[in-house]
Structures are given as C-alpha cells and as structure tokens.
Length: 74
Image (cartoon, rainbow, N blue to C red; front, side):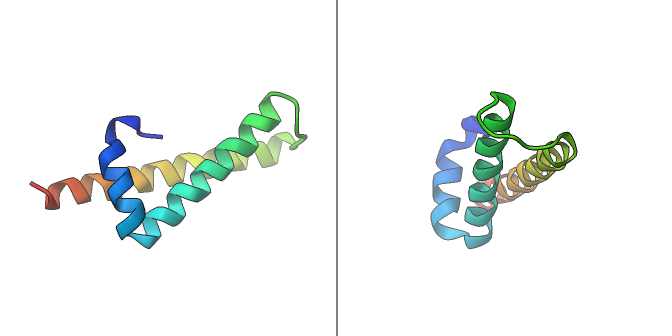
C-alpha cells in the first residue's frame, strides 16, 4: 500500500496509533481478499464487495494522514 511513501509509513506506524491501526486493518483485508480471489478461502460475493470497499476507504484515510504528515515535515 502506497509504496512510494515507505519512509512516512514507517514513521507514522510508530508515532500514530490510529494510522498503525488503519494500516494493519488494510493489510488484513488485503490478505483475506487475496485468499478469496485465489480460491483458498470462500467469501460470498457481497461480503467480498464490502471488504474491498472497506479496504479502499482505509487506504484513502491512510493516504490523507500521510499527506497531512508530509505538510508538517516541510
């Protein structure tokens, strides 16, 4: 997720508990979605759709936190 911001993500994961929680939840959803899509885990289509939307929402929220953090580092 957002690989071009690795330094900021590393810093935020250790200094911002909310960001760390969002990042962890995003990664958990990513793993579950991948398992469902490769057939190793069954998730019905409605739940899978909900999970994808939640993952995207978390990514957007994390991105907003990163951008705000970058403003304070200038």
